[in-house]
Image (cartoon, rainbow, N blue to C red; front, side, top):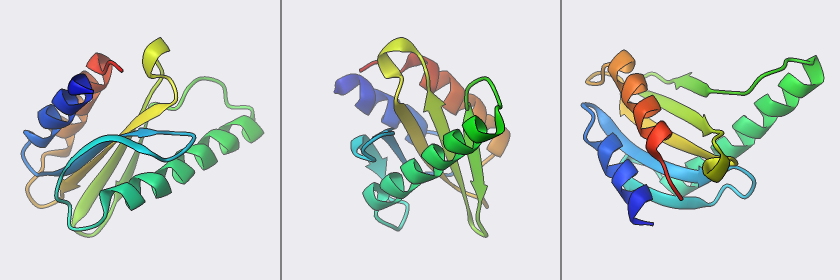
Length: 122
């Protein structure tokens, strides 16, 4: 689990980071989390597992091939990023990353999220 905690710490070091979690897509269960986004990160992670599953179902229904890389949800004061992990040992997981919209650089945060996602090990 230390490797997941290291991934969370790397994300929380990003300017504007408020919270991050590694989540099991099927159950919505949080495997590692950190930060203080001002809401229950575990409930949000479970809810966002529904978002990812719905998008995957829709892609299937439409016959869209390929995988889902990420989802960006823009709120008035926050960005919520979801990066779906697809490599062998991490398939079925996603990273949920919450940013303060006023202080975060979205492009840099997405770049860091992709870098961390490539290094996640379970």
